Length: 201
Length: 201
Image (cartoon, rainbow over the protein chains, first blue to last red):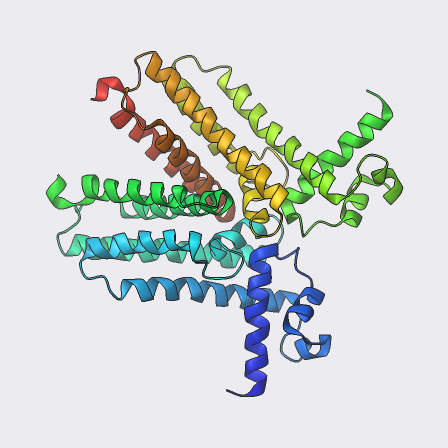
């Protein structure tokens, strides 16, 4: 890796942590300079402005989320195990953050950018929609294999799973305990067992 | 109302809107000066620092949330109607914000303050816990009246209701539509009908 690429990646990583902690408006270029130990010119060598940094920082955070999913799902075998693992992966954000600052960086960006930053909002919306699609795929795989009932409202349950776990992550982070994510996980898993599985019908 | 009280309230209202939109770190004293059309001295007449403003702004936002609940619940009669109205009140945050900037200011503060501002985090945590207690009271009233099953896990369902709706509010805000809050509301109401009501047992 060249020194330039190395510096660019360091700017992105540090900025992602700052944006995830303090929000887009709460993180200035001078904060990024301090965190990276770079002068303004050293940053402008790689990015034309703070917006460009914020957008690449979001992509970096999004990829960290997906990496966590892929890593955990690599070990899951059956469709039920895969769906449970998706839930566990979300729950893990509460005490093992994917990006410093905690929580889910995609929802953090969504909350931070609504009404203040259209481009970040667009990226956060696409990020959330891709998480929902990810769960839909796992559900559809299970339906195709005859494990989940064919009449499951895939879009509804995928959205519900994401919303419930995201609310739970915020609650667990603010309460400094796992009650929120554990409660949400347990509820969703019970719901899957009793309402989604074919042999529960 | 004296002119001093009027100015103090204007500072709190405008600051609550700024903090709810941009977060604590994204809103400077000079942003507050611009929004209130006051000089620094005019603000320091009423508050010793930005922290004091932020804490009073949080209390203001919290009271706006509670006011929305009280207003809507005033019309509800039966325990079931009351619980449905709590859900509708949360759902209303998506397209009729209680504080400019949108979403739920309590969860917005929770997300914003975790790992960055212990006092605001403490207030957000207490705010969330009081919302949960509020739902628990409605559930317990229903149990006492024989409408809800006595074996309902009141703490679990109250937490689940809050987490699901809060996640849904973020999703609806970022998607600019009501799919999130409508899906969450419908799911929770169906769950209440099938799992909580005595006559569903």
